[in-house]
Length: 107
Image (tube, rainbow, N blue to C red; front, side, top):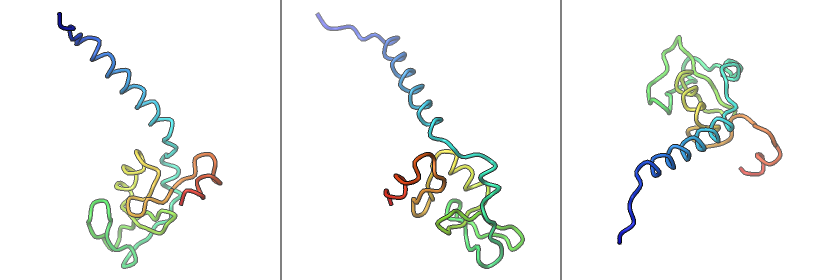
């Protein structure tokens, strides 16, 4: 006799796994709007183009500079940092979250 597939059980397992992943991701997120406002603004020719959306910065609109020196549109870097704590280009840590000593030795 073949084993029966229990769809309800399979779906509930997926839901528990998704909830676990969401919980872990939300614990890692240390980024907020205040941190974005504290980032330096780069304007003019120095800004170049945003590596997230690939658009050139307007002369009157600056970009936010992350600690490694790369510059991105505020909206672009906010979306990125909502899910990652690294520069989209070089992957260096943007905000220390806890043990800064351990993070400095990862790079």
